[in-house]
Every structure is written in structure tokens, then in C-alpha cells.
Image 1 (spheres, rainbow, N blue to C red):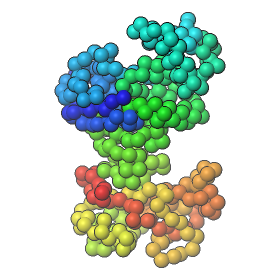
Image 2 (cartoon, rainbow, N blue to C red):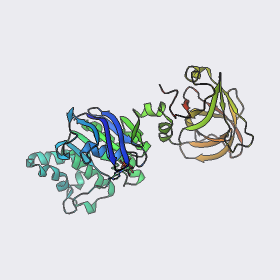
Image 3 (cartoon, protein in one colour):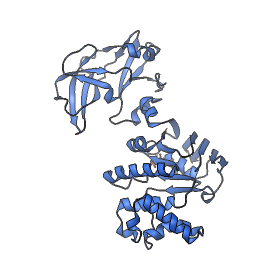
Image 4 (cartoon, rainbow, N blue to C red):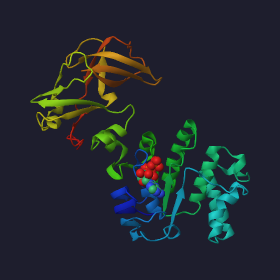
Length: 370
Ligand code: ATP
């Protein structure tokens, strides 16, 4: 296995800068996920690493060896795409053996590698079937198997699960993660699905507009988003964002344009948040960011709890998402499924300020990211 380093990578298509000065490092054996919305440059970065696109600038190293100008075949990588093309006239066994036959591998090695891949992917019983007798998930396993048998230095996967239904995706997500950790295989995995990224990656590289926004473990990017884009992209429901100003030891939440009374909601800075919020500039436009699980609800008034009208209740089985109106803004809170709430009634909400964030509204950068 091997590390992958990308330095100042630039790729343009006519006027479009698809990848803009991308710098990232994938350590040996690491599972790195490229995450971002459609068009942010994930696939182009991956294709540059694979050698399928020639960069306009920058450098790519695999296992410390510069490969920027090498063809894909000389990079010792394996690619798994969303649309897996198995050879229809070959059995699963023959499909798995194909990449090894292509490089004249001895038959005993082929047999051993095919058997090992089939075991890892739980497809031993399918070895003598043709692809038209396989389900979508089984076909995807064979496609992954074809990448594994070569034992490449790096696996590159571009949305390999997006053609599968939701249940199968969840199953395969866990299986790929397990397989990757068993093989200790350096893997780069592209997805636009933040749940997939959070559940699979050792690290996540979040991209937007061809720029790397943040790179870190799932917990780091969730708990400490560097800017409003990352804060909003990771997490479902998304982080609540409330415009505010700091005045001394108070955060004044500014009313939304459609709030009836136009009143500022005053939130005293809690002692546990003083160190983080106290240095935010006074009088400047700020955004308070609060995750839905960091809002505690009560049915009766309590110290530090703000009154809030219930706007919508969404029972999701394992939890309940309650939307409340605070200063005219709709704020989502995550509660246990048994918490009673009815549309239109008044509840009381407390923001856990020790886990809340402040962003500069103009630059969208976090003022509290550690
Ligand atoms: P998706 O999730 O939709 O695949 P992505 O994040 O992988 O998106 P890319 O496919 O890398 O994004 O595309 C980045 C930008 O480069 C987009 O604006 C896209 O339109 C453009 N682009 C990508 N490939 C080409 C190409 N071959 N010719 C012209 N423009 C391209």
C-alpha cells in the first residue's frame, strides 16, 4: 500500500477551474473520502490521481514517487466506478481473473487471488454465474473484487454505490469499510452523500467550487467546521444558523425579515462559552450556529430556556425533529421520539453554548473553530 500526495493541483476545462490549488495527503492505509456537492471537483481530482486527466498545474505523488505525467497503467492503482462494466459473456470467476490474465499472472496465483477476493466479498457461491444472473449489489461486489485481485497500491472509488437502492447502499457501505480495513488498503472514495462520508471515512476532504474547504476526521469536521459551507453541508438536519451581534456578554439574535414583532432575542453568553464567544467582535454581523441535538427542550419555563412556538413536528421513529420559531427563524431541535409536542404550542429551548459556533457573516469563516 502507499501514500498519495496532491500538491497545488490545478485542472481547468476551458473557462472552468474544476480543481483550484488542491493540496491534500492520504496516508498509507487510510480511507479518505472526497465529499462535496455536484460540480465541486471531486471526480476531476480523482481522475487526475488516476492519470485519466492531465493536470494544468501541480504535482501528484504515489508512495513518494512523482506520477503526474505517468499513464494510468504505470501508477499501480485500481478504479471502481459508479457504472460497473462486467464482461457479460464471462462468469464471475472469469471476470475476477481477467485483470490478472491481462498481465500474464500464473494460474495458481490467479486461483488463489480469485478465491481470496470471493471470500472477502462473500460471493463464493456466485463464481460460476454470468453477470445477467446477479443482483445490482452482487454485480458491484464483483466489480470491487476485480479491483482487489490486482492488489494495487491505491484504490480509487467514484460513487460506487450510487446505483444501488437505499438498503443495499447501507449494507455495502459497511462491507466496503470492513474490507478496506481488513486489506489495509489506501483508498480514496468520492461521494456527495455526507452520511456515507461520515460513516466510512477515516478522513473527509470537503470540497466546494474546486477548492478544498476542510480536511479532517468525521468528528473533527462535524464538531469544528471551519466555515459556514462545511457547517451546513455536514449533518442532517443541517446546523441551525441565526444572525446575531455580540454586545458585551450578550448575543442579540436579530429577527428574521418575516418575524411579526421584529424583536431582538437576547441570549446571555453562558459561563462555559465565555472563552469561545468573548473574543468575537462586537457590533459585527455574526452567525450563531447550533446543531439540532444541541438544543434542549422543556415543556415548562426554566432558567436559561427561551420560549419558542412549535412550528412543525416530524416523528422519524428513532427520534423526533421539532421545528421551533425563535425570533421568526425556524430552528430544528432533535429530541427523543417520546418527547410530546404539538404544532402551535409554546415550548422552552436552551442552546448548549459549549457546543455552539460563531461565524463571521461577511467571510463565512468560523470564529470558534479550534
Ligand atoms: P459530480 O458529483 O456531479 O460528479 P464533481 O464534484 O465530481 O461532481 P467534477 O465532475 O469534478 O465535479 O466537475 C468539476 C467541474 O468541472 C464542473 O463544473 C464540471 O462541469 C467541469 N467538468 C468536469 N469534467 C469536464 C469536461 N470533461 N469538460 C468540461 N468541463 C468539465
